[in-house]
Image (cartoon, rainbow, N blue to C red; front, side, top):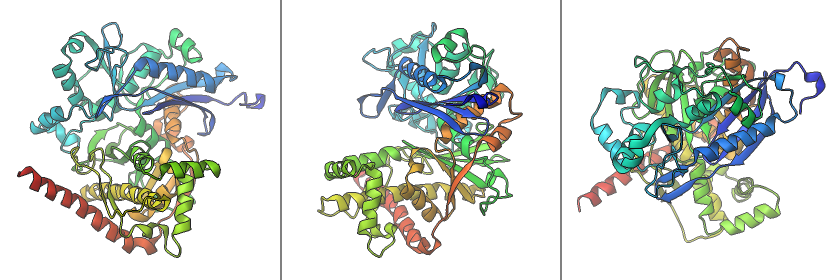
Length: 527
């Protein structure tokens, strides 16, 4: 905790609502995380592709972790509060009470999660309209956006639909809970609701102060001073982008040094992955969301690529393998995480080969939850080519490696689409849980051929949320100034160019996999 000598230090609170937990951080003006707390939140999966949460459960967790990080801190030093969250849909009635988003009538389950794919038929109909607004979402709307979910509720839950008072994107729900103001963030409405700026309503730029700040009731619940600035929120991936993409790179010998921020892509990699690139003029990238004006960095256009399941996919592959109990026992005995142990095991079995070359005969197509970018095909399935009868730890380590490589190959696929449309990308900036895995980071550097920058603070998403609060407080003149002063580089990972030919061949195979999947589906559809 801060000492008395630091009495003049200004602090900002960032709250991040992820898929499975809520986190909070107390961050100073230099971008250092001083205190951190986390609490799990509940997820219901009543049937395949249906994922639901509770807004009351989420808010209670926000209050708990915020109280924890500010405990013992002089309230006068806390200057601002910023929220980010997944782009999940919150449904409440006219009195702001939760409404059921399920056929069971469970009203406390009033949130349709971002990764919920129940509205597949609805999004198909929306895309069939070929409406001009679809050009701003890569040519086809995703089932993870809000319009298809709204249509699903209207068609499947007429009782809830009739009682609805408000639909919130989860980040906006949190700023409403804190301020009592129903203003929306430009980030959420542009990226997930096909909003265009000529439509009126109360929409604020990310980091702009909401209302009169924290209400008395919310202040008591959160353990914060009444009236402190509350910022217009961001989607979680965008907060991660904010926390890393604007960092000062001088002295690191990077190709993006002395180049505009448009030469960078921020990759936020957790349960899913998002690839955030900005441009001075709108760039329309087939299969990549956007361009969205001022959705992340004010004054710049945003394109957002993504992979619907990355961290979730790695967990699925590893924990579902027959050798997982053996892995778990050995990792526990060595006092390491299962992924640290797997990385060490790969080093043991590689012999004289580079680790990545172990998968010369093992290939994965990673779209176990459909393809978000650049193919925008939620019907695609995962593929594994090269399986044997082996059931041991070696085989588990290899399929783990091949899955990580497949995710990195998917990133290359997205970056190539962005570059073909006009982006000039030289450097990747990674944050999120998967950025803590050195194998994941090195594979992304080697497979894309681009240096990877890791932030000094691992919790870049929380720093991004705190940057919003700092901007709302008036302590920084702009988001850009706060990004430069609070975003810090920790480590740079360079690609091994000697491995380029191997990964070029892996990429050829990667693209062949989806060709073959479409071919065999075409054959079977003719039955």
